[in-house]
Image 1 (cartoon, rainbow, N blue to C red):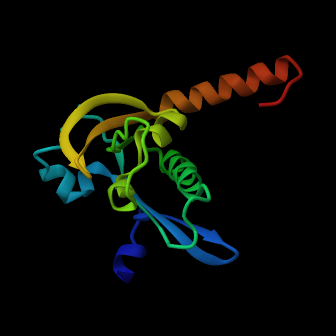
Image 2 (image 1 turned 135 degrees about the horizontal axis):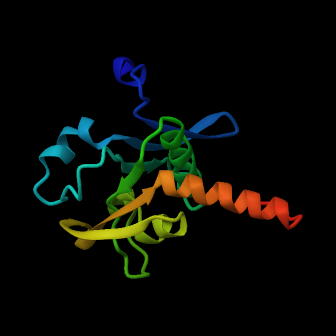
Length: 160
């Protein structure tokens, strides 16, 4: 575990609440994730060297407080800082319903689309008997879009 956490890039991001570790999101280059590389149910979309978000873990007592959204924003920032061209994830499609915590470890479609990810394709994978999708956030395009919004906001006197 020490070797893993000391590696570069880091294998994930941690959320702290009042100095206590409360949540974890695992991510990294898809090519470095053996289970994804060998997966028969989650397809490789193209040859871009994407990074993948593979799981969330939020400790009991800290759930339902928005930590997964904070973790996802941190993962996006970290992947962008590491110059990943895109961030991909494989969330469950809840159809708008609530699901058991055990099925939500891969994230939900809504949390990713709210963060700007777009559905790329379906998979043969399921979690809690619900379908999983491939979603992607193009970090190069998102960065360009962020800069355009910031510039537009400055020109109009607003703030972005």
